[in-house]
Image (tube, rainbow over all chains, first blue to last red; front, side):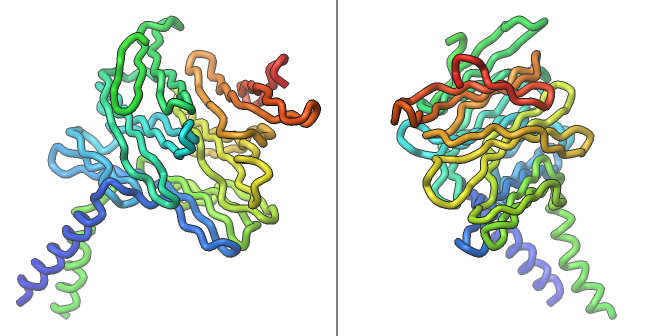
Amino acid sequence: MRIAYLVIIITFLNFSYLIAAENEYVIKENNYGVFSKSFIDITSSKNSSKCKINLNNSLLFEETCNSEKDIKLIYFTNFYNKNSETIYFLVFNINNTKLLIMEFNQNITKLKLRNKSYIEWDNSIPEIIANNSEASLTIKKYANNKEVLKYKYKNGSVSKGN
Amino acid sequence: MKKIIFTILLFIIPLSIHAETSLFSIHSQCLNNSDVSVYINNKKVYGFEEEYYLSLSLIFYVVDDTGRQYYVFQDNPEGNACDGADLRIFERINNKFTYMDTIGWCGPGYPEISFNNNTKEITVKGQAVSRYPEGVIIPLLYVYKNGKVTTIKGYD
């Protein structure tokens, strides 16, 4: 009977986790005139060699890692594009080997993942310039104060040197 | 007694399986349309009172090569006089979160914000609608460096 309880509870917890693991993330609560709240909680949990990164308790992505802190949020922005959509970008440095660019659009209180792309990288800090109207990012790498690499991200695609 | 211990273990074991490290945690809330607060890791780090407000929106965050973090929040007063209002700039170093400066903002559309790690400058581009002559769109450019915002001449 005790084993049955244990199985039921663990199954329920994992099932709740799966329900939350869709590509939608609640980021706002509003009760006009009384209360409004915006929140972004990004957490990392390690299980064997994988880190699970959650945004507001829903799975964002998984990556191989040595430690939860090998994955860092280095950039965040949001704005309207020319179609009056609210676009969010999150950029993570993963294990000092690549950047993960995640693009979302906002639907009132939720973010929905639209695209994501990877760029090979190191531990350096990129200069990231957002173009609001076309919802693109220009990502520049510098060495000794000189620009040595440039990428452009748009709609999930990355091109080099534009 | 055994049942109590067993029940406690039932809840602790799954929780420990899902133990999490916070990478980024920021909340902004507003009570009664006037009491605005910002929280990092559930600790209040900034607040003010202003009537007819909603929670602040984090619109930009970046970390530099020294670990210093830069945050830009946009005010959200109720009503539609501005398409997004003032921009409040903060820095966080060694877990100390400090308000630095504000850019007065009432532009049509969101600002374009970028950060240069070499110069440690935040550049904010946008537009404003002039009153005289009425309705003319004028470009805006601000640079934030060393805790201060400068308006670039020719854009104001």
